[in-house]
Length: 257
Image 1 (tube, rainbow, N blue to C red):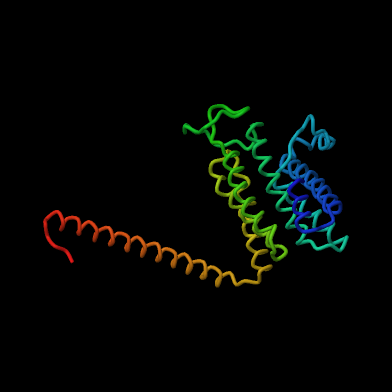
Image 2: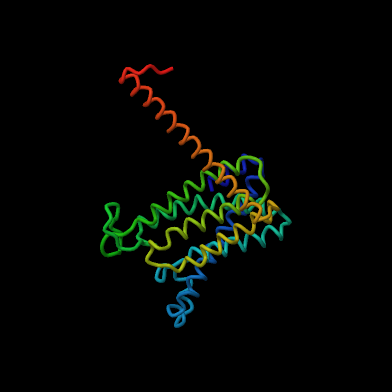
């Protein structure tokens, strides 16, 4: 909420309206997270559907269900109020990444989304798990923090509406996908790929860039950087060799002009 409020101040938006929409999106996320968990574990709720609301006895929320529920409610709410969906999506994406950082740290302390068993020196003991585990939650929080820092620098300056949310989806998807092999539960791999593809689709739709031309431009830029780096290394190497040659000739009492 703090990040959302800061963006409202930076963009000179109605803070009360933004915070109200943030609350609505949060409620939609909670409902979506609970419903997706129930659908994924129907055997626990078939006998007594009332267990759906008994969160204290049958706890459980789904991250991807929360994402879906929150974004759907945000979309319909902004359309109903005739507001710019992409502008609010940009704001929500920044708040989402900030919330995910805290969520990852909470999972590390609470023992959810645990990593695979590991004997590495950085492996840690997780609550409710046997043996030491890969600290995927800490690594995920670190990757998301880097993403948030980069996106924040883009968000507080002029940008096309929708670009921030597209970058947010791409970074979230990649962060989740990279760490998927180190998690016990791999069910999020599909949604991670979907997030990346959705982010790329929104990015090229908003910026109106050709994906192939953009890829060629990136490859050309990388090739030029590698060439410049190689040329600099070669030039430096030749310079040091000439200096060494001069020293050898001086020691051999050979005049060098």
